[in-house]
Length: 225
Image: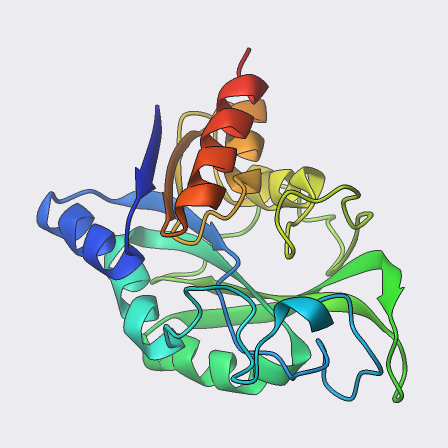
């Protein structure tokens, strides 16, 4: 089952909650503010030309962690896992808000991108993934997985912050079983949906930006051919 929704994630998650829908895992890369140079202390990061004076990368980038994280907690099944992508600038705030939403944090994983963004204070070549749970701890399916996940940054991106499908597949395979349901409330260009197709999982994706929603629909549909 693939369910793709073009709408505001706060409103759409409220609808899912009212419908009594639960998901087995959440994997999402939320919008957050960056510096005007694309990364903290940067000398001209790859997002520089896409960021306005308010530190916004996209049209819809003002939502706060405090608004959507509690809704994720309510939708997630007991003992389910959640993965929240984050950068260095927002890591501290997001860790606090994840715990304030009643999640328990296992650890912070590292995505080693094998590419680097120019920076005056060490070039950025990684991002963070907050790995959390709802309720009792449940081990991952492959306990031999290292906390530093090495996957190449995608080329020819359809979305500026697009994540590699193989990275998402690793998270899915470790925290769910076939026919389980994954939620991505900030779907972007649909990488999580493609990964769900590839691993025989159900998927619920929400995206507010109509252009990226259409890209995700086409991409996820074509991955299932």
